[in-house]
Amino acid sequence: MKKMLIAALALVCACGPKDGEYAFELLTTNDVHGTYFDSTYTSAKTRKSLMAVAWSVDSVRAAAGKENVILVDAGDILQGDNAAYYFNYVDTTQTHVYTRMAAYMGYDAIAVGNHDIETGHPVYDRIAREMKAAGIPFLAGNARKDSDGSPYFPEYTVLKRHGLKIAILGFTNPNMKNWLAESVWRGITFESLIPRVQQTVDAVRAKEKPQVIIVAVHSGTGREGEASLESQGMDLLHSLEGVDFLVCSHDHHPYVVSRGNTALINSGSHCRFMGHGHIRLTVKGGKVVARETEADLIPIDKCKVDTVMEKQFHPDYEAVKAFTLKEVGELKAELRTRDGYAGMCDYLNLVHTLCLGCSPAQISFAAPLTYNGTVPAGTLVYNDLFTIYPFENQLYVVKMTGREIHDYLEYSYDQWINTVSRPGEHVLKIAPRHDSRTGQQGWSFVNRSYNFDSAAGINYTVDVTKPAGSRVDIASMAGGQPFDPEKTYFVAMTSYRASGGGGILRAIGIDTDKITDRVVEYYPEIRNILYNYLLEHGSIDPAIIGDPERIGRWRFVPESLAAKGIDADMQLLFGKQ
Image (cartoon, rainbow, N blue to C red):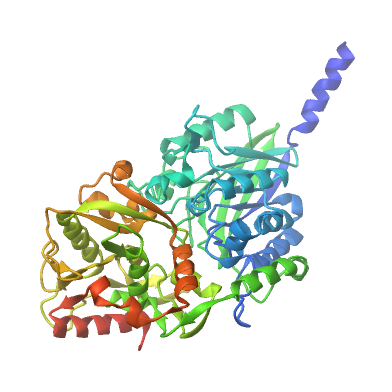
């Protein structure tokens, strides 16, 4: 018995960390948004992708040793590109290409993003099962089952390297209900990262006793104390205890900062950078007596790709390319999404026409969802539909009073324009800004342009000389009928907006937690509505989508002052038109 006890004690000691110096490299990605392949499918042009990330990962592994490298993603992997869409909804019989790529690249853990949830239960539930089978946990510790409060996804995983334990905890965006329709996340409650992350960290430390803790959150870096569910990164950095690395995401802005021995890493988006953390540990008497962390960003070179990976996944690429280049109709005139910032345009006329075609919609709200996309006139292929409508938003028809519609537009335009009194002032609400993604200085909107909703189905003007709250003058319905502030109208809008996205409905006093009380009709994804429109009509004709009897008219006034100011601002944003 004594010999058995000694042997057991010796085995325990052998499994623990030996005294010495240890070093690990943390590599991170986030907001990949479907950029699995280095091709754009439609031309010879290449881009940064997981193929190039894989090359960089292999380079670090070759230098540091495979056992000393941890690879983590912080979410938004399943939306944003044709490849993701194709394997989400078209080819659902084989294992998703992302799951296979993540296994090939050797990811240790992946956090769930809001756009991953956007794909709907059938997709992300399947991905979670596939990831589990591949040995890659799909983490979201703050996503809890409504039925019993237990985690819907795994909370964490523990790696064992050189006798040390490395715990990786993952959490998703807590503001899900303001991003997505309830139907895609039904049965789940998403908790704030504060205090859930610290509570989970404490529980994992007590149970697993890890020597290194990595927290990956699908939340923006944000600013300390801003109290935003969208961007809790800085508040976490300055409040978390016992965490070595905090991996942030969601806002697409590459950023690295440290507080003590905790380093925050946000690698941006679309495989432009790879986050890199380095930790050195000193172990004495089986315990870590000293640790030091540092972090930086590794630029990804699109020309250096993993050629073995490229060859292995080439059949998947060819399948996506064939789907992408499928002809779907004809476009009679070029569409430019940026034209929507200056006034009425063919691009938004199309979106409004699609929305108003969904009974019983009388009015529609829509914003440019691609910041600066162009679809040339000619034959349309399926790829063009992603430029026109990049997200899997559904369409809702919601009851609103005329007064609420007016207030809604007032709030929207206040995010979009300034009050001006003389030529030379900025009409558009823009500011000079350093682009951390490109390193260049330029101009950008102060607020998110995908929240710049205009309306169709009514005739109205927006006076740029008047203060917020008194700019919008609604003259009539599109057909000339009176517009009544006290009357109830049926308004088409995206599920993102109806769920509270952009905060516009809340700003005018509508409780988006009870939006179902106002919804009179649900429609499928707007891109599918566009596809069905093309199947029926065969083409997109400005003369039809721009029919003022159907969509109405709106403009900025006074036109002489507004037009010159907006033209100058558009040149600052996009260069000579």
